[in-house]
Length: 121
Image (cartoon, rainbow, N blue to C red; front, top):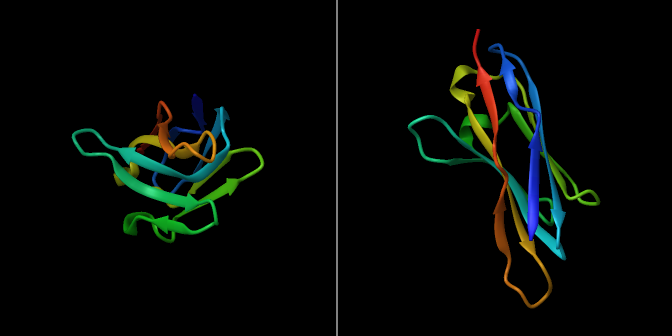
C-alpha cells in the first residue's frame, strides 16, 4: 500500500502565494505520474497539474502562468507552487500518484486526504 501525505495549505489573501507538498511512502516500485487535483464546494474534482515519470507537465488552463508543478524523484515528492492566487482557487487540493508495486502489476491511483486552500481578504 501507498500513503500520500500533503502539506502546505492554508488561508492566503488574493494575489498571495502558497506551496503545497505531497510525499509518497510505502510499497513503491515506480511512480508513473504525480499530480494535483482540486475540488471546490459544489463542484466536481478537476485537474490542476500533472507531471509524468519522464517530466512531461500538463496544466489546467485556469492555472497556466500562475502555478508550477515540480517533482523530486528521489524523495517521491511532488510540489505545487501557487502564485497570484484568486478566490476562484479556493478548494481542497488532493495529491495523486500513479504507482506500480512491481513490473507485473498494473499501476494504481492513490490519493491524498486533501489540504484546504482558501483565498480570501
